[in-house]
Length: 180
Image: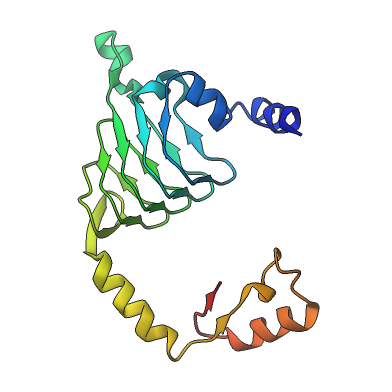
């Protein structure tokens, strides 16, 4: 099965996490890399990823910026450090020279151009700090008291039934819910 994964990555012009680690990238425990994540293969040894990090689909981590190549003959490069307990939302881009602290959420479609400190939520283009992680979690715990909350049996990994899918569609009309 590993050769299939390798083949799919090659077909898409990407490298597996294992291959990038062999090339020098540092990765902690429990790294979740969803479909289409690009970890700069040309300078992957400049990437350091902590424990419990999830990158949603189509995240790009760049350690180089070729905007200067045509004019100066050189490409800018910089390290990218991602701390522990970090979630980076879909379609986000992390640029060279950036550090993302521990316990951070980066919102979908963000462009991270500057360092993001520990215990924060940041989003936007360019990404800006929205609130503390503690404040974000407190707000969502309050919302969970009134919103629909679903267990694993409402997911594909829990073999969700058609009836449960239909129930979710109805209950989530005009509101957000939460799922295990």
